[in-house]
Length: 450
Ligand code: PHE
Image (cartoon, rainbow, N blue to C red):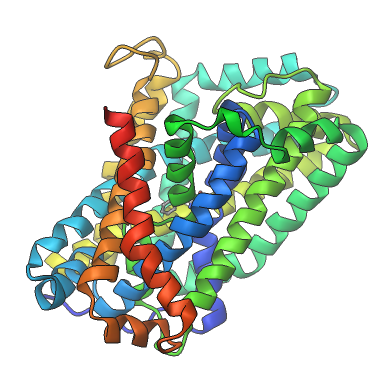
């Protein structure tokens, strides 16, 4: 087997930025608001935050730990650690399932990022000037209705992702993340400020932050847990791959908390930017995947210099999505070069091409297949890919990694990687990955299946 390249990150700061870059993306700005909206607002947010703290962060720690200890691509890492500590190299299958999931997620991720890309010239051209919710809804529907346009933007975004990964992570991703992430954060803050002035901020904030716990059921918990995994980029090998490039002197628990804080802050800010506009303009909070593409343009259309502001915002969203897409492609490419050899460039291009092709399933779900419901019910093909990856594969993958880190990995090894010795914090983490995380995931999954 080909040995993994030397640590990729040039410093702790660079790693944190790259990991935050992976975590913060469409999941925060696009998916979180619309999932909160379809999940009834604050009840979803409360469960989501609970999932991040009790399940997401412990698994993030576990995944980085396994990645650093294994030191290979996700499959090689899990097979190697499995053979050494878990009784069988068949643990490599968990890594393999992760690689496959990453490919599927990348396929639709690139399509949605293409929407954001399409909105850069739209905003700049003043398409949204003075528009109300009905007009922005029509503009969005126009984009979705045109498979050719969607394909063009999807292709452009996937090409950019391949380009960055082909060039190696260090040059592109590190550099981009370090200043673009803070810029996106500032933009989100500004949008929240706009919502305070011009939107129905009180109603938006109440909707998002004052939970009605009677709304919580198994479906909501599964959706929130899935979103927590998706947003933190855990459960599919991204953090196994990033962990394998991690220098030994970086504190995994501390970095994990930083990642989770940045990630959750961005999601909540995005929600606080979106919902005041939803209520001020009589839009539907449960509108679904189009939510931010319908609400935020209303704000850009009304504010001074909104065309420029809007274009910059969507451009930043594209970059945030790019650093995440790169982290989806990276574990697959790491697996390819690590397992089978060959050049990084060739693997990046080949895997990118496969994900690009799979992306057609998502594109068509919004137009020519808009009425296709593969299993009856109301899920389109895209809804199925999204559901199976986010709500099934990621939680399952994450729970298996937690079980491995908690039960198979000897305590001395995990303590050494945790870096604090046998402290209360370490014991709390171990309890969470041994018991709480797997039980929570299996409980919700079983509840859904039966
Ligand atoms: N966390 C990213 C986001 O929120 C998406 C992602 C998921 C990236 C899984 C890598 C792995 O947009």
